[in-house]
Image (cartoon, rainbow, N blue to C red; front, side, top):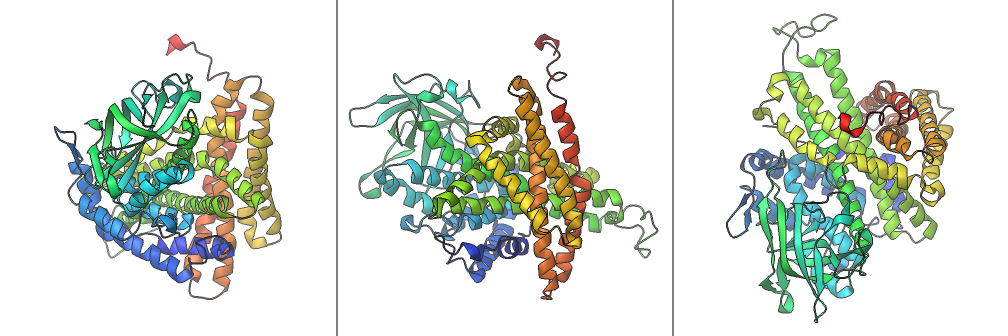
Length: 597
């Protein structure tokens, strides 16, 4: 059975030494996030994930969720008890506002905890993860009365939340949504339609489930301009906060799927269910984007999380599994063979995973800090810059981290050889579970198109130019330090290639949009590699400083510097390939007629 140890020390290092969260003490929640508190929260979350959730991961995969004839759903053995421990620990409300029962701590801390939860048990972590997204959407767009009625019980974990967008005839193209909303004299609406792929749509972990559903009010315009967002609870609110009558929304079936079996992915039938408008009519997609963007960042974290747990188990196996001798002579002559970790190709795979994980974690935390600034800074320019960053990085984090996270689970499985293909070691479950992250919350090709088509030109390219300026400033600031040359020189070349790719789109995509479409995924990966390279430069600066301080962390910092050099030498050069593909344009991609396929 796989094991998991939360990377508490690495997160602490990133928060304290790389990003210096003490500099954010002017923002709400940060003053309370003292180093001792941060370490205690992370350690306790890691313990809960290792001791409670990890053992349930295979249980959930084998048992799955069961739908009963009355439409109710039973989660796998142990999930209900684990969820009770989760809520009692206050983990759902780590960053939720204190006024609604949350702990009011920074979002960056909640993202770190989210990674631990997903590594330990991704299917389980999706239940509270969706609730946190619902909390964010309701907090941002709902009326004061709706906030008061729903947020406290979502924060406490007494209720849970879902996101209902997709329908049988539409996936990404939400303009095709058919679910209808009929106005009622009391101000409510009757919601009728079918939603599919609804994660955590029905389960037995909570007493009530709050669905946020997109629907079209009768007479509203066609397309996305006519969509509104509704709060549709499983049980209607009763007097004094008690549960009222059962609403006309139910699970019609559970999808039979490749992975995440422990999460109930439901077909939800709305048969004239009572719902209440949240936000303005016909602006539901804008309101839903709050939850969707939260979910996209959360899905990116899933990619990182599964890459991390797969790496941990692959590294442990590589140190134990005996096969062959080192090419430079036996390293363990007293044994019948050397452990496979002596072989360069095994090291290549392990180092690739490790180098990605550490930089990806930094990218997530860096972006989560910007989220805290965007929501809480008093200075309008700081809020705007942070919001720009969030918009630019969301598709990169979602797309790159899930693409590479899945590839890394396959790489970890490869280290196990034939043992990775059987269920006993758990690697094949990581592969199956990671696969969905590339698909939901907008397939990764859509993320790439969003990056190239919307995020790059937005506000005259303001966010992109700010990113270029920040990376360039880092290269300039540390350019005189010879010890930083192995990191800065490759980053400078990669940044130049990203700028070339951007200019190529400006010159070639307006006249032929297919050029942008054909190169979008390569651009997303090129951009992501530069972002990860920038993270490694920041990590290297902090590691050098910390190692020089003589505080007993020298070996760990030396390992980080070596891992960063591997990234620069063996992974970052892929930017050159991505640039070449982008400059090839769309001609060969679009050459064949549709009927030729």
